[in-house]
Length: 385
Image (cartoon, rainbow, N blue to C red; front, side, top):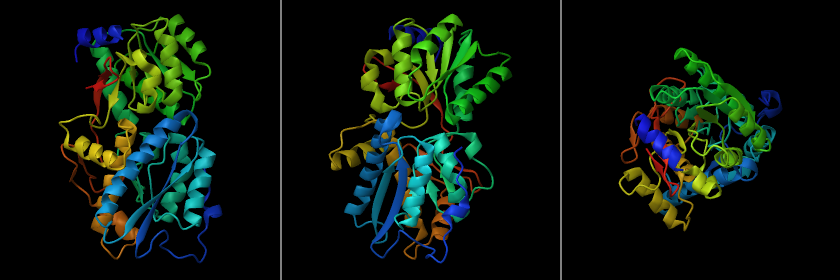
């Protein structure tokens, strides 16, 4: 994407929980499992600043599981999903995961949303050997060579920033500011952006913390304008992004904005309306609305089958994460154990969903995709990569 095309589009628009309190005692090693079902648990924001994204993500998982269950499940077992609402609050995430495990509801876990939320539970998940697929975070701090039970799907935020920042530099944009969510996620994106700017012999024109609920958006907009920023990298997400973008567009409609992949979630597009036009962000999954992508067509069919109409990036990511869970269960066999599921997941080298391929390289940290592109929202709210 060249400078003229990019600018014209723009102008046209951790709460760490110790393992001691999670002791297993004499409980059975394999829980959430019977001859007729396998339980998959998740803690998601079904309310709060990411409530729309979490609800959509959950729907995508349900669509994928329903399609498999209609065909008899996996090795005769129905896939049962239990999702608990954490409202994007890390302490609630910890309590939810503890409840899922202590109630024997979850044989495995998937799709916990948020950097701080995952930081709150990953040590215990790893210590107990619970297979866990698809953390909804790209935090590099949560990916290490000691992990044996965690299977990431999306690329890291560092990977995204390494794609995003050089794009701005190559287009000759000057005075790049960073607006970041005032939590662990935003601070990690900030640090990654500052490192990447430094490697390009640049320094941020300013870095401004946006409240998780977006309540200080007006102040942040004033700070960005006072810094005379020539472009803004957004390490934000959910309703906070919406609050910031709406107020910034009202005062500087042509200022280039480029976010990480979770900056604008699909459930917020209706609120952004025309303000989304020209906004760019990293893209790590195929276009969920595509009629050409095999993965997108399969996802759309699964959503139609359960009469769900919230087609978008969040529910598509849920569907994609579910495909890895399903494939891991298939490969683990009928005599299912957590050890076998972890081994089966780690052994996936090439899972072709139809023009979108996932696979692990056989060593931790397990990351299934490294694809990062840049897209720009058009006048209809569709992402054009």
